[in-house]
Length: 262
Ligand SMILES: [Zn+2]
Image (spheres, rainbow, N blue to C red):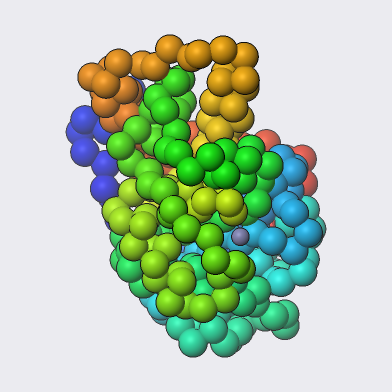
């Protein structure tokens, strides 16, 4: 699978976007490694809040199944062998743990509504949830924030913990064809064409929320002009840029916590 245009490849010449696999088993293993590493990074960055939060990776064979974290396990302990596989009915079909009902209600609907999406990430990280209470989209304040320019949405409602797939459907509708949605009074949700990309958008969006909160607390920030924001979005906001930005973080966390691959 390759969805990078020649334009996207500008500045990334010499890199092979998205590895190719000879077998489904190898592709599945790769996705699970990326997923376990994403949890370790979320744990390392303090994105966990008790048992809240989930990242999912679509199974490469059973396209309506996804891999997810076992309910109640610390992000910081998750290994590849701990991940569980959930079908489109919410049943755990591989692994010996329960699935968080909210993870199923939200992610099953996102994966169903967006066949292009391989992975989705959501947690109650502190800056994302703080920003979400303002009921506003992020402004193009920094180069990094331009990744979300005209490519994220606001789910302008909050009615309790998302346990009903119908609510997950409403939320997916708000996401539309963008890379992220701010869930008001709740937190952030990001998606990607790879696990790497979904995890990266989450990490950088959390930091963009932090940057805007800091900047607005200190004064009146200057916005990047629309034309420049639009150009920058094509440079830092492509599927390829998101995928590639994750690679140093993956290498770092695997070197620091190699047991995540067990
Ligand atoms: Zn949540």
